Amino acid sequence: MKIGVVTFPGSNCNMDMVHALNHDLGYEVVELWHKDSDLQDVDAVILPGGFSYGDYLRSGAIARFSNIMEEVVKFAGNGGRVLGICNGFQILCEAGLLPGTLMHNESRKFICKNVHLVPVSRTASISAGLDTNTPLQIPIAHGEGNYFLPEDELQKLEDNDQVIFRYSDANGEVNSASNPNGAVNNIAGVCNDKKNVFGMMPHPERACTDDLGNTDGVNILRGLLEVVELA
Image (cartoon, rainbow, N blue to C red):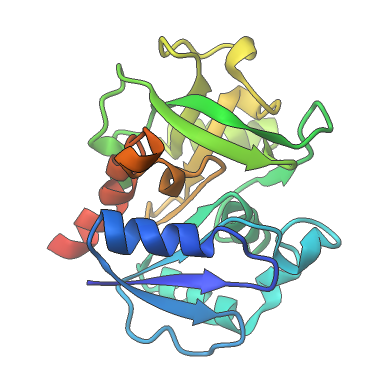
């Protein structure tokens, strides 16, 4: 199985993702460039974190118009699985592939630290196989991770089981104290209504190896990719 990892000008987590997928999880990786117009028959696409195009205008607003994104939109429309992490999540929201937007953190400060997540959706593959009683420790590194959606759309998102992760404390309690950026309903990740496009602010690729003292990210990525393997 081939996994495409897209690099935009300003991406800085692309090689982290390539290493995690190839070295830690054993997948074949295809490195895709923002000017490419061919996904090279990959089985899934991942948009990594970073600061595409310097985060000018809004995070992800320029990257959304890259050549490669035209192909990603088509791929997703045909049921292909797409994951955006951090800046990749922002790009997917700007492209209309995911609902909502990512605003500046409430603190107006860049936050880089480990946080805890609880899996929520029982119908989205990326989180369905994870134990809802076992919080995951996953790093965040962002200045604009404050997820927002108007109340009526938010209710539809919740009702349709599209929230994949929420920020929690180490005991799995979801509360304001465990919310690092002010995200509505402590939302750390969502999927589209067809549940083939996923976005999350935390970085599972930075928690995939014992060398880093944390492998909680492995099952998140496998939750996305094992379904593709079985298809």
